[in-house]
Image 1: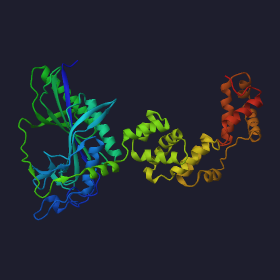
Image 2 (image 1 turned 45 degrees about the horizontal axis):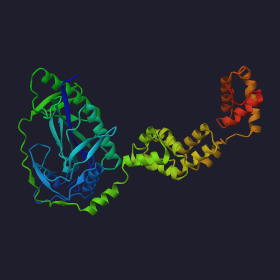
Image 3 (image 1 turned 90 degrees about the vertical axis):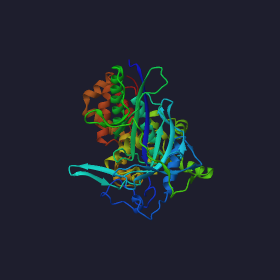
Length: 477
């Protein structure tokens, strides 16, 4: 067992889901030709002035509210100066002493939370592309709106860091604040980690980890750094304050630069932007626009529909999944059946066709009607699935699809009698086994009729007819 306590804090940059940049009308798009979406404002050319994107401020405010942060009545933009090829102005417009929001927390699961220090708004820098010909600069990302979410050093294991990011990503996606696509860089994380002796109240020397491009990568990098720092301290050495880059292919971090002296960013108030004033009415309007949060919806679904945690996890994966589910229930679909068919049948079918739920060829009301027909035994499970598959290719009312397919349910004993007799004649050994008390052999007879009727025979009614024909009780072992 290690003699040290691990201390982890995360700084997460999240790209806001806007169409244009934070201070210019240039479009936001992760793909496209390099340097094709750059505006003079992004470059800080003489005579241009930044114009705040109202929607970006709204989304940032909603993010703060979703994270239970306190939105400040006044926040202020400033210039963060540093010189790097991907920063065309020579400074980044950010927030420092007066951020948009303070406090808040991110759930970790099992009733645990990690506190947040603050949340602030800033513009993104450009991107450096390293090639065999040299380093190229793409400024398409310069000026893209971000919120930086700064966590307190409350995390004690790499698994906690993974949980933090997983829950944060789910919450922000659910609320429509960001798509949080790690591959495209709309969610990026820097992790700070240090070790201190058990029982100590003084944190150890902090190391910052960069180049973390997935949730699992964050956990792997922190696990490696935890082992590395433990080995250094156990040998009587000192951990250097530095920034280290993670190399996932090698499974190790490597030193990038020393942090013994903090860089002087020469923060100055942004002279071209007034203080950002958000009154109580504005904050209340953003809270209303935020809608129901995942935890609130989970509690409501559990109480109203009696669904299991597995069901709830599936329905809460995205807001639109839960919204679609509620439309099915409102149209008369049984909640449990609606959840099962949505999660196990419709969503996989849409993924195969590369269709979003909003473009589903089966409407919520149609699925509700199908489930009602199944509940009243107009359909068997097999015929319901056949109708469902037909509706995916030819949208229509389920009843119409049933008629087109000729799959009406057969439950009339008079219609089932000749079918049962044919099965008994075709499978005399199975019939004899049933008469001898081997109940399992009845499945062969049921299957024979189901194949003959393409799944239209009602299983319960057919079982009764077969048992009567064979002279055995309709229930037994």
